[in-house]
Image (cartoon, rainbow, N blue to C red; front, side, top):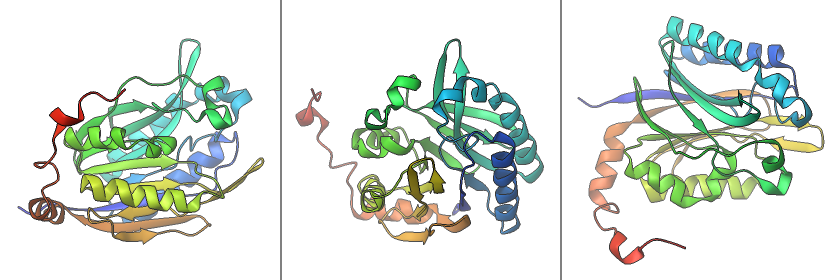
Length: 263
């Protein structure tokens, strides 16, 4: 049977440090895309708080109740959500994306690549594992923002069977074209679907351009947002991915024995 799923990106301006306000925006956006029959909703990076670095340990303590709210709404609506939140583990705080499928946390991914240019590595701990997880909407891989600049990360997710890669992000101006080009490249080279949700608006000194995107395996941009709060949806047809991979057999034509282990 040909599988199809309506996927959505829920883009909004994150209120720095205001968990209740951000949770309200997220839940409202999830409900609106479900009214359009979406079954997968991807939220931005650190969407409950933004990068309120000084208060992240305290803000992370609210993440369990945020997850409970998502578990409740996804169980009610029969949906999958993905988005990253501050996660506290002992004395460390991680930028962690949770995959919640119809009321259950089925996977979590701690951001591997921390953006040292902005000091992210001074406030957050880095993860150690990638994630591909089976869900009711297909096999999902997860990457977060800066991970986009590391093609080997995305190739690993593809080789592990990801059909859709979800990319929560806080990607600021003036690097819009990097965002758009890299996302399309990751979809094309791995021949899979991508849902990339950026935030929008101004947080402190940073101006975020939005431009969330849903991308097909051939690199076609199926939906793209502007710089305001928006929900985007597009139908993902998995037969399209299977057909494209049979036409251009990149995975069969790989030569990993030649590549060896990269230094």
